[in-house]
Image (cartoon, rainbow, N blue to C red; front, side, top):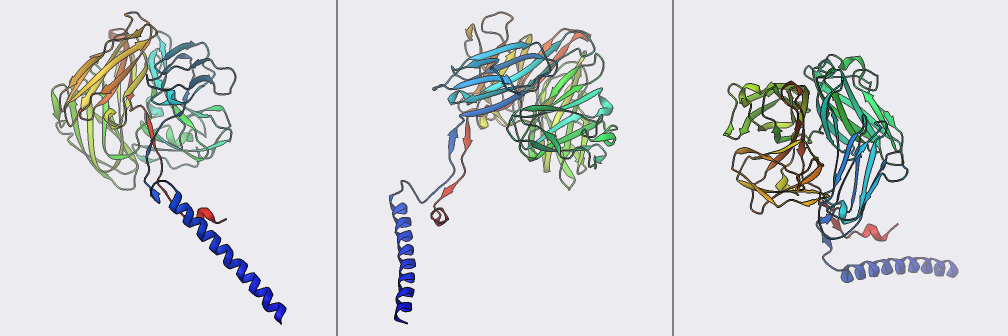
Amino acid sequence: MDKLLRFLGMRYATAALMLVAVAALYGAATFTRPGEASEKGREAAVEHAVMVCPGHEGGRLAVQSLTQKGGGRVDTTTTKGGAAVASMTSPGQGWDKDTESGEESYTVRATGPIAAGLEAEQTTHWGSGPDRGLAGARCAKPGTDLWFLSPGPVSTDRLDLYLTNVDSQTASVDLTALSGEGPLDTPDGLAIQVAPRTTRVVKIGDSAEGLGDVVRSAADLALRVRTTSGRVAASLRVRAGKKKGIEWLPQAREPARSVLVPGVPGGAGQRRLLVSVPGEADARIRIQVITSGGAFAPQGQDVLDAPAKTVTSVPLTGALSGKAAAVRLAADRPILAGFAADRGADVAYGAATAPLAASGPGVVADNRFDSSLILTAPSGAATVRVVTVSAAGKSAPQDVEVPAGRTVEAELKPPGGDDASYGAVITPRPGSAPVYASRVLATGKGEDYLFTVLPIVPAPMTIRLPDTADSQTALTP
């Protein structure tokens, strides 16, 4: 009995000593760690970036970095791997190259300070033939939940979705869509497998993966790309019809109750606003158009009652009277918004964006032909500084004044005065109200006019790190 009591005493004494040691360790860590016991999330500089240029018919790839302290490296390769097509190591550099083949997608990877604000684009120009058109795309970042507002198969000859997996594990993608008649309920388009470091092309309306026959009668679409494992970069290409234009559609901004769609181009042709309500409840939406003459509600179109889980098309041609514009929408439910425009022999599309003053400047990597900016300051006056840059050097800064509640256009000019492509950096000046921007690239006249619109998004300069706090669970297995 004495031996048993001694054994139990030693056992509990050992356990007690272990608890004392853990408590002492936790106390020491609490009193010796720098800072407070908990820390709110903070901003950190971007030091990694990945973008995918979809390829297809080839075209010009262009990459532009911002001038800033620090180094790093940018490599452009085919997505399947291999030697770099091009590399950059100096912030402020730009690079462009015409690709001969459209069979490959290209991946741009950046590390170090040069990754902050990096922009990459793909631009295609076909002056003749069945695919005549000028098309531009921002090279897509991999994600897990992406949206597009698009014309449907009934309005196009071809609608192709390019899904690229830049990672080492297979990605599984669910593709769903909304139309003017409501959701397109079908099991087709679910569990699409995209192998590592490959691009898969999904033909919307022409294959089971592309939602099958149910989508063929849709005039407009809100297309959602979600992954159940992994992530993908997504790009959507439209062929409007033989010699009627080609285009890459911009990704739509995530659903929100207040959105602004910049860069509706001026001139001849039709203009349509596209609005989608992805939620379960109908939305009441107030519409305001902002032109060089001011902000106003289109007559008879100031309020739109949009059904849930649909896409609604609103004609804007009469309200704009050929003027460049932005469209501001305020809704009682989260919505998606964009526009469709046609002029001459081509088509172009736009999407709602965040303002440049929110988190960084705007960067455009490939400017040539006739390049111009459409700038809108909906809530207050803004001054925007524009600098163009190429291998020939930088232009003198150009300050563009944007009055409150107005849209203005500003021509872009190459710093060297030649026809070479060049980058542009658009930076709101201190004290400016939020300003929204798009770039219009155009060539030709009359029925030979070709154009493309690129919504300009804030260059990602920082990321938000999550909150941290002390926890005893860090000391226990």
